[in-house]
Image (cartoon, rainbow, N blue to C red):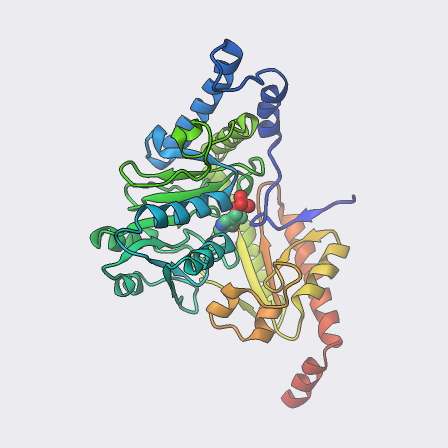
Amino acid sequence: MGHIIYLDHAATTRTAPEVAEAMLPYFTEYYGNPSSIYSLGSAAKKAVMEAREEIAATLGAKTNEIYFTGGGSEADNWALIATAEAYAGKGKHIITSKIEHHAVLHTCAYLEKRGYEVTYLDVGENGIVDPEDVRRAIRPDTILVSVMFANNEIGTIQPVREIGAVAKEQGVLFHTDAVQAYAHMPINVDEMNIDMLSASGHKFNGPKGTGFLYIRTGIKTRSFLHGGQQERGRRAGTENVPGIVGLGKAVRLAFSNMEEHAGKERKLRDYLIQRIEKEIPHCRLNGDRERRLGNNVNFSFRFVEGESLLIMLDMKGICASSGSACTSGSLDPSHVLLAIGLPHETAHGSLRLTVGFGNTMEEMDCVVEALKEIVEKLRAMSPLYEDFIKKQK
Ligand SMILES: *Cc1c(COP(=O)(O)O)cnc(C)c1O
């Protein structure tokens, strides 16, 4: 492959070489089962314990409140399904938002089929949930509020602390899908009133298929996988030791350079936004300008098809993502873009660029130039654009 400009860090990130290196010995040297008594096993057990301690410390949590999972989707499934089951005696009502990741939305749909009732809160056109809407939605039979920390498409950061405070005041549990936020910004579960939190390793230069669920002490939960006694009997299966070691290493790297990384990303993001807004007509920035992830750029370009845009960017070696058919095979535009009020046509012409470790200013210049050329080319082929220009004259 030639030079790739990778601008899809919200989808996944490159595993840091230090992470891969830290993992290797746990495949070939310390391959013992952490549950075994002999020292080969205890070496693995110790590594798992250290990763758990490391992660707990970053959240202000206790070590035994961290449960390793096979990624963010599993953590979301666990948080919702196990809580729903454990608290069914209190009620069967769950509150979430319309802009959640499918790992939450499709789990809610699953629960609805099993007799639970779900309220999907609207968001404003800036893509932010109003904590007062959460308050209004809470009923005596509400058992859980699940609102994401930061949105994966438009990058909006939710008022998590305030939503958590409302839930706490009403005696309702609060879960947040923090997959896009964890290890990118500081999070404290006590200060932010978070009862459960999902995170995923591959969104911050860790290995794919790794992640964790934080569950506050005292919360009732159910075993998510049945079998052995791993993860305090709640998630059976021999630990993914190399993955957990890699996850711990990625956490260490992310937290030791957090401010520097975030600063660099914001600079690239702001430069992209500024140039695109200035140099490409008929575009619109999606999501809140201020309360947004430091790495997220999301634009809609009128008279352009997101899919075509992606294909033409790919021909230039640029990896990006669009708000249409993001789950490939589907022709529906993104539920997030529809939730912030974009008409179908506009949502279809959306592009997400998410910067990350290793991106440079030169790459941003390349991308803007490519984008200008491609948008112009695609518009030249659009009959709608032709009509629009005629009417303007
Ligand atoms: C990527 C992502 C997930 C899923 O995480 P996996 O580790 O890929 O299962 C869940 N929620 C959000 C917000 C995400 O961005």
